[in-house]
Length: 280
Image (cartoon, rainbow, N blue to C red; front, side, top):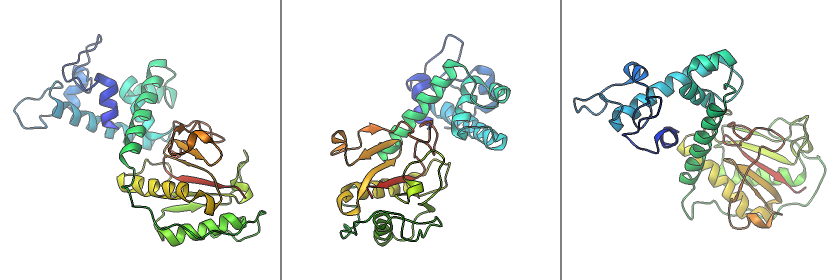
């Protein structure tokens, strides 16, 4: 996130100076840097133009803003609220009880968040050969007739079979799993034809190990979509569908939010859980 922010702020130019007077790789105004800056690399100079000093100051300020956004409990993703505070000032976030309606700020938040997600996702792919063994072909059945071990009402035979196969392949590694759920906006969850696998806490961007686990599951589901009866998979802001020729051989489509809405949030963008829907 800090790398994406630095790229958007200055293009990684340590000597950048904005028309408003913001300085260095993290684009600090001089007064703000006095609060957050320090000689991080011990070279005897404390300057926003020194990348170690500027980046560490950026990290301190972002941690502070994230704590403020978590405590304020405003609508929206806490990381995006912190980014808005960095761009527009926390006072503007307070005044609007969320991301301010400024075009510059909203574009800034979107650019940084999307770039961070893209970099994290590309860096977190599992190494070749890391996938568990394939499952056996499962039953072919429809109708919500099987018990839902995640606490829902029922699952289809295909979904229940796939759930058992995932448990055999991965074990008990998931922070949470949710399958059959009532949803006002429809979808496969109410039909018992979908499950969400969260490697970490819902609403929080996963760490590197959790991202790798999520990608391992997503790639395993895609590799064995036929035996498992997979219809589509959503993970890390991307979607793969068995019926879309454009998806063959890759994760080429950004997810638009679907029934959830705004894809630029952690949960609606499916950055915190792997969603898998089944054909039956």
